[in-house]
Image (tube, rainbow, N blue to C red):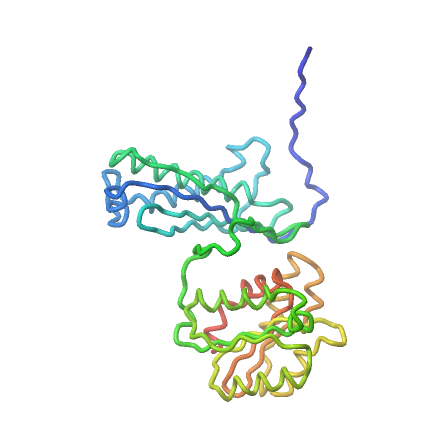
Length: 316
Protein backbone atom coordinates (compact mmCIF):
# COMPACT_ATOMS: atom_id res chain seq x y z
CA UNK A 1 0.00 0.00 0.00
CA UNK A 2 1.35 3.39 -1.02
CA UNK A 3 2.05 5.68 1.91
CA UNK A 4 1.57 9.32 0.95
CA UNK A 5 2.67 11.99 3.40
CA UNK A 6 1.21 15.46 2.93
CA UNK A 7 3.69 17.75 4.63
CA UNK A 8 2.86 21.44 4.50
CA UNK A 9 3.75 24.71 6.12
CA UNK A 10 0.74 26.13 8.00
CA UNK A 11 -0.82 29.16 6.29
CA UNK A 12 -0.58 32.11 8.68
CA UNK A 13 -1.68 34.73 6.16
CA UNK A 14 -4.90 35.56 8.03
CA UNK A 15 -3.30 35.76 11.47
CA UNK A 16 -2.74 39.05 13.26
CA UNK A 17 0.75 40.38 13.87
CA UNK A 18 1.38 40.58 17.64
CA UNK A 19 4.35 40.81 19.94
CA UNK A 20 5.78 37.31 20.42
CA UNK A 21 8.14 36.15 23.15
CA UNK A 22 9.39 32.75 24.27
CA UNK A 23 11.88 31.54 26.87
CA UNK A 24 13.41 28.05 26.80
CA UNK A 25 15.59 26.56 29.50
CA UNK A 26 17.83 23.55 29.99
CA UNK A 27 20.56 22.28 32.29
CA UNK A 28 24.02 20.90 31.61
CA UNK A 29 25.87 19.02 34.33
CA UNK A 30 29.67 18.87 34.24
CA UNK A 31 32.48 17.64 36.47
CA UNK A 32 34.11 19.78 39.15
CA UNK A 33 37.25 20.12 37.05
CA UNK A 34 35.28 21.32 34.02
CA UNK A 35 33.32 23.80 36.13
CA UNK A 36 36.59 25.37 37.30
CA UNK A 37 37.61 26.03 33.69
CA UNK A 38 34.19 27.45 32.90
CA UNK A 39 34.24 29.81 35.89
CA UNK A 40 37.68 31.10 34.91
CA UNK A 41 36.64 31.55 31.28
CA UNK A 42 39.49 29.31 30.21
CA UNK A 43 39.66 25.96 28.45
CA UNK A 44 41.72 24.33 25.68
CA UNK A 45 39.22 25.90 23.23
CA UNK A 46 38.80 29.27 24.96
CA UNK A 47 35.94 30.89 26.91
CA UNK A 48 33.24 28.21 26.84
CA UNK A 49 30.15 30.21 27.81
CA UNK A 50 30.92 33.20 25.59
CA UNK A 51 31.30 31.07 22.49
CA UNK A 52 28.25 28.96 23.39
CA UNK A 53 26.19 32.14 23.70
CA UNK A 54 27.17 33.23 20.19
CA UNK A 55 26.40 29.75 18.82
CA UNK A 56 22.93 29.81 20.41
CA UNK A 57 22.10 33.24 19.01
CA UNK A 58 23.17 32.19 15.50
CA UNK A 59 21.10 28.99 15.75
CA UNK A 60 17.95 30.84 16.85
CA UNK A 61 18.27 33.21 13.89
CA UNK A 62 18.54 30.25 11.48
CA UNK A 63 15.84 27.99 12.91
CA UNK A 64 13.82 27.86 9.68
CA UNK A 65 16.87 26.46 7.86
CA UNK A 66 17.12 23.62 10.39
CA UNK A 67 13.44 22.73 10.92
CA UNK A 68 11.76 22.34 7.51
CA UNK A 69 8.23 23.51 8.39
CA UNK A 70 9.14 26.56 10.49
CA UNK A 71 8.39 29.99 9.08
CA UNK A 72 11.36 32.31 8.51
CA UNK A 73 11.10 35.11 11.06
CA UNK A 74 12.81 38.47 11.42
CA UNK A 75 13.79 38.36 15.09
CA UNK A 76 13.98 41.54 17.16
CA UNK A 77 16.00 40.04 20.00
CA UNK A 78 17.77 36.86 21.05
CA UNK A 79 19.22 36.77 24.56
CA UNK A 80 21.08 33.92 26.21
CA UNK A 81 22.22 33.87 29.82
CA UNK A 82 23.39 31.40 32.42
CA UNK A 83 22.78 30.55 36.08
CA UNK A 84 25.98 28.89 37.28
CA UNK A 85 25.53 26.53 40.21
CA UNK A 86 28.00 24.30 42.04
CA UNK A 87 27.69 21.28 39.74
CA UNK A 88 25.58 22.42 36.80
CA UNK A 89 24.67 25.38 34.64
CA UNK A 90 21.09 26.38 33.86
CA UNK A 91 20.87 27.99 30.43
CA UNK A 92 18.16 30.32 29.16
CA UNK A 93 17.29 31.48 25.65
CA UNK A 94 14.77 34.29 25.14
CA UNK A 95 13.50 35.27 21.69
CA UNK A 96 11.24 38.21 20.78
CA UNK A 97 9.73 39.57 17.58
CA UNK A 98 6.63 41.05 15.95
CA UNK A 99 5.09 38.20 13.99
CA UNK A 100 2.03 36.19 12.98
CA UNK A 101 3.47 33.03 14.53
CA UNK A 102 5.24 32.14 17.76
CA UNK A 103 8.96 31.94 18.47
CA UNK A 104 8.95 28.81 20.64
CA UNK A 105 11.05 26.79 18.20
CA UNK A 106 13.56 29.62 17.83
CA UNK A 107 13.99 29.72 21.62
CA UNK A 108 14.32 25.94 21.86
CA UNK A 109 16.73 25.76 18.93
CA UNK A 110 18.91 28.50 20.38
CA UNK A 111 18.84 26.83 23.79
CA UNK A 112 19.75 23.37 22.49
CA UNK A 113 22.62 24.61 20.35
CA UNK A 114 23.94 26.58 23.34
CA UNK A 115 23.96 23.38 25.40
CA UNK A 116 25.59 21.39 22.59
CA UNK A 117 28.25 24.07 22.15
CA UNK A 118 29.11 23.86 25.86
CA UNK A 119 29.29 20.07 25.48
CA UNK A 120 31.58 20.33 22.46
CA UNK A 121 33.89 22.87 24.08
CA UNK A 122 34.04 21.09 27.45
CA UNK A 123 34.38 17.45 26.40
CA UNK A 124 38.14 17.76 25.97
CA UNK A 125 38.45 18.53 29.69
CA UNK A 126 36.15 15.75 30.88
CA UNK A 127 33.63 13.85 28.69
CA UNK A 128 31.34 13.12 31.66
CA UNK A 129 28.64 15.65 30.78
CA UNK A 130 24.85 15.43 31.00
CA UNK A 131 22.23 17.57 29.27
CA UNK A 132 18.81 17.44 30.93
CA UNK A 133 15.57 19.26 31.73
CA UNK A 134 15.20 20.98 28.35
CA UNK A 135 11.77 22.57 27.92
CA UNK A 136 9.83 25.68 26.94
CA UNK A 137 9.41 27.79 30.05
CA UNK A 138 6.95 30.36 28.72
CA UNK A 139 5.51 31.92 25.59
CA UNK A 140 3.59 35.14 25.03
CA UNK A 141 1.57 36.64 22.22
CA UNK A 142 -1.00 35.56 19.68
CA UNK A 143 -4.50 34.29 20.35
CA UNK A 144 -3.52 32.18 23.37
CA UNK A 145 -1.78 35.04 25.16
CA UNK A 146 0.63 33.99 27.89
CA UNK A 147 1.43 30.35 28.66
CA UNK A 148 3.82 29.15 31.36
CA UNK A 149 5.07 25.62 31.93
CA UNK A 150 3.47 24.27 35.14
CA UNK A 151 6.79 23.10 36.57
CA UNK A 152 8.24 26.63 36.55
CA UNK A 153 5.63 28.07 38.91
CA UNK A 154 7.33 28.53 42.26
CA UNK A 155 10.78 27.48 41.02
CA UNK A 156 13.69 29.61 42.16
CA UNK A 157 15.30 30.34 38.82
CA UNK A 158 16.78 33.46 37.32
CA UNK A 159 14.20 33.86 34.54
CA UNK A 160 15.87 37.07 33.42
CA UNK A 161 19.35 38.52 33.87
CA UNK A 162 19.83 39.77 37.43
CA UNK A 163 19.33 43.49 38.03
CA UNK A 164 19.79 45.83 40.98
CA UNK A 165 18.13 48.97 39.59
CA UNK A 166 16.01 49.49 42.74
CA UNK A 167 18.75 48.82 45.27
CA UNK A 168 18.32 51.09 48.29
CA UNK A 169 14.80 52.15 47.22
CA UNK A 170 11.86 51.39 49.52
CA UNK A 171 9.01 49.88 47.51
CA UNK A 172 5.50 48.94 48.64
CA UNK A 173 2.87 46.98 46.73
CA UNK A 174 -0.90 47.20 46.87
CA UNK A 175 -3.57 45.09 45.16
CA UNK A 176 -6.92 46.82 44.67
CA UNK A 177 -9.62 44.20 44.29
CA UNK A 178 -12.93 43.45 46.00
CA UNK A 179 -12.64 39.73 45.30
CA UNK A 180 -8.97 39.37 46.28
CA UNK A 181 -9.53 41.31 49.53
CA UNK A 182 -12.42 39.01 50.41
CA UNK A 183 -10.30 35.90 49.76
CA UNK A 184 -12.29 34.84 46.68
CA UNK A 185 -9.09 34.29 44.71
CA UNK A 186 -5.32 34.36 45.17
CA UNK A 187 -3.51 37.62 44.45
CA UNK A 188 -1.23 36.64 41.58
CA UNK A 189 -0.80 40.16 40.19
CA UNK A 190 0.50 41.57 43.46
CA UNK A 191 2.99 38.72 43.69
CA UNK A 192 4.34 39.56 40.21
CA UNK A 193 5.05 43.10 41.40
CA UNK A 194 6.73 41.79 44.54
CA UNK A 195 8.97 39.48 42.49
CA UNK A 196 9.92 42.43 40.27
CA UNK A 197 11.01 44.34 43.40
CA UNK A 198 13.00 41.40 44.75
CA UNK A 199 14.81 40.81 41.46
CA UNK A 200 15.80 44.46 41.38
CA UNK A 201 16.98 44.33 45.01
CA UNK A 202 14.53 46.92 46.34
CA UNK A 203 14.07 47.49 50.06
CA UNK A 204 10.90 45.66 51.05
CA UNK A 205 8.04 47.89 52.15
CA UNK A 206 4.36 47.14 52.77
CA UNK A 207 2.24 44.62 50.88
CA UNK A 208 -1.50 45.03 51.22
CA UNK A 209 -4.69 43.81 49.52
CA UNK A 210 -7.48 46.39 49.55
CA UNK A 211 -11.10 46.53 48.36
CA UNK A 212 -12.09 49.05 45.68
CA UNK A 213 -13.05 51.65 48.27
CA UNK A 214 -11.87 55.25 48.09
CA UNK A 215 -11.32 55.54 51.85
CA UNK A 216 -9.11 52.43 52.05
CA UNK A 217 -7.05 53.30 48.97
CA UNK A 218 -6.57 56.91 50.07
CA UNK A 219 -5.46 55.94 53.59
CA UNK A 220 -2.97 53.40 52.22
CA UNK A 221 -1.37 55.92 49.84
CA UNK A 222 -1.10 58.64 52.51
CA UNK A 223 0.32 56.15 55.01
CA UNK A 224 3.02 54.98 52.61
CA UNK A 225 3.95 58.54 51.72
CA UNK A 226 4.36 59.41 55.40
CA UNK A 227 6.54 56.32 55.93
CA UNK A 228 8.98 57.63 53.34
CA UNK A 229 8.20 55.03 50.71
CA UNK A 230 9.93 55.90 47.43
CA UNK A 231 7.81 53.77 45.10
CA UNK A 232 4.27 52.45 45.42
CA UNK A 233 3.10 49.89 42.86
CA UNK A 234 -0.68 49.38 42.65
CA UNK A 235 -2.44 46.73 40.58
CA UNK A 236 -6.16 46.69 39.78
CA UNK A 237 -9.06 49.14 39.73
CA UNK A 238 -7.90 50.81 36.49
CA UNK A 239 -10.70 49.66 34.18
CA UNK A 240 -13.95 51.38 33.21
CA UNK A 241 -16.48 49.83 35.58
CA UNK A 242 -18.06 51.84 38.39
CA UNK A 243 -15.82 50.13 40.97
CA UNK A 244 -12.58 50.95 39.10
CA UNK A 245 -11.57 54.12 40.94
CA UNK A 246 -7.77 54.00 41.38
CA UNK A 247 -6.93 56.81 38.90
CA UNK A 248 -9.51 59.12 40.47
CA UNK A 249 -8.35 58.47 44.03
CA UNK A 250 -4.63 58.86 43.30
CA UNK A 251 -5.09 61.96 41.15
CA UNK A 252 -6.78 63.76 44.07
CA UNK A 253 -3.64 63.25 46.17
CA UNK A 254 -1.09 63.83 43.41
CA UNK A 255 0.81 66.97 42.56
CA UNK A 256 1.69 65.69 39.10
CA UNK A 257 0.61 62.97 36.65
CA UNK A 258 3.21 61.22 34.48
CA UNK A 259 1.17 60.31 31.41
CA UNK A 260 3.89 58.41 29.58
CA UNK A 261 3.73 55.48 32.02
CA UNK A 262 0.15 54.70 31.02
CA UNK A 263 0.72 55.30 27.33
CA UNK A 264 3.67 52.89 27.27
CA UNK A 265 1.66 50.18 29.03
CA UNK A 266 -1.30 50.49 26.67
CA UNK A 267 0.83 50.51 23.54
CA UNK A 268 2.69 47.35 24.52
CA UNK A 269 -0.44 45.63 25.84
CA UNK A 270 -2.32 46.36 22.61
CA UNK A 271 0.21 44.22 20.74
CA UNK A 272 -1.23 41.23 22.59
CA UNK A 273 -4.89 42.25 22.99
CA UNK A 274 -6.95 45.24 21.84
CA UNK A 275 -8.70 45.43 25.24
CA UNK A 276 -5.49 46.97 26.63
CA UNK A 277 -6.77 50.31 25.31
CA UNK A 278 -9.52 50.19 27.97
CA UNK A 279 -6.98 50.37 30.79
CA UNK A 280 -6.54 53.69 32.60
CA UNK A 281 -3.15 52.86 34.07
CA UNK A 282 -0.86 55.82 34.73
CA UNK A 283 1.71 57.15 37.21
CA UNK A 284 1.63 60.01 39.69
CA UNK A 285 3.89 61.90 42.04
CA UNK A 286 2.38 62.04 45.53
CA UNK A 287 4.67 64.27 47.61
CA UNK A 288 8.07 62.59 47.12
CA UNK A 289 6.63 59.16 46.27
CA UNK A 290 6.14 57.71 42.80
CA UNK A 291 2.84 55.82 42.44
CA UNK A 292 2.51 53.56 39.39
CA UNK A 293 -0.84 52.01 38.45
CA UNK A 294 -1.06 48.68 36.64
CA UNK A 295 -4.08 46.73 35.36
CA UNK A 296 -5.49 43.88 37.44
CA UNK A 297 -4.76 40.80 35.33
CA UNK A 298 -1.43 39.00 35.87
CA UNK A 299 -0.60 39.02 32.17
CA UNK A 300 -1.26 42.77 31.89
CA UNK A 301 0.84 43.45 34.98
CA UNK A 302 3.80 41.58 33.50
CA UNK A 303 3.41 43.41 30.20
CA UNK A 304 3.18 46.69 32.10
CA UNK A 305 6.47 45.95 33.86
CA UNK A 306 8.05 45.11 30.52
CA UNK A 307 6.89 48.50 29.24
CA UNK A 308 7.89 50.78 32.14
CA UNK A 309 10.12 48.74 34.46
CA UNK A 310 13.34 50.22 33.07
CA UNK A 311 12.25 53.85 33.48
CA UNK A 312 10.94 53.56 37.05
CA UNK A 313 14.40 54.02 38.70
CA UNK A 314 15.07 57.08 36.55
CA UNK A 315 11.70 58.59 37.47
CA UNK A 316 12.42 58.10 41.17
